[in-house]
Length: 412
View 1: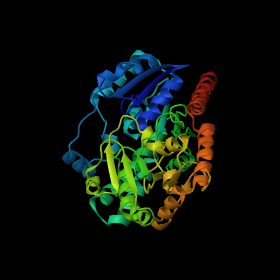
View 2 (view 1 turned 90 degrees about the vertical axis):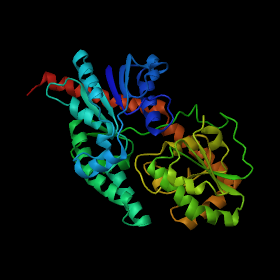
View 3 (view 1 turned 30 degrees about the vertical axis):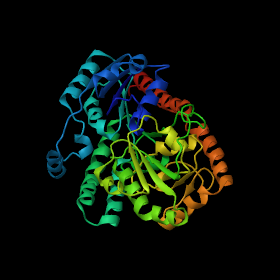
View 4 (view 1 turned 90 degrees about the horizontal axis):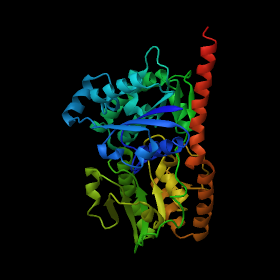
């Protein structure tokens, strides 16, 4: 089967959620299908391993938008910010060229930032089936961000921005989903939120996953900390991650340190946002910035914390920690979309006092830590290894091909 993938950034190296999902889907599919990749990024990414996985790869520079331009379009444009972020006439031209020159069975559009290209490709006579992989229910993510911002800071610019984006995203995400022959969601919760836009949408859940051979207990030497390390990992200019770290540092960590004065929060991830600068002078917080490999930090954690209060989709960071057998304390939002049981695979707590108490308890309870290790690892292996997930996407393709064949035989 000939597949065309449209991705918002080069899927290699797979260093954050979007690139991890895109790379592992492409790597798994490449074993049985022919893949072309049109993406944004540096031309050097056409080197292995992408050149070995794909028949052809074309990269174009991502468009740049100033903050002034973003502010203007927030108010003046009918498009949501995420629809404008990666719009490029050069990319649109390349897509038109490839659609003229080759007949694809499936065009896979990866994420809301690429959805305008799906709308562009959707034309009368298009032979290829269009699959929209909606990485988050984006309208709901923005609504949750608005709700959390209002609760924490009142009517600030962030709350106003998220409210406007919620309105725009509902319209745009509905149109993008309706243009597709099949919509893919990453969790049942996201699927339900997308169905709120249009109950008639054809939608399949293809979850996020983790490479359980790469993220496995004993794969790396744990980083030694001379304190009780409470580790959080993620891209640190991503708004939900910034909010999670600030909430934990301000509301939870002081309570933890009453019982464990040696405890420190270790924040691991690229591009720390300026809002985190206020934490840099604190002796109980360590911000690493980008690291070559997050696994030694996860393996060295006494407790992995996922104090997320906004966002959507499913968190790859939680799967990585479970795969490595590290005990996790998370908010309900942090494990939203995963069918985990509180106290079995993870410990769930939403209020600052409760979250702190669970961290303290777990750090000192070796029996509970081992139980979480065992159950978490088995949970990930059974349902979230990419070798289990990729065939689910192939089933979507097969169903679309069968439907196309049926329609061609019975055009009436």
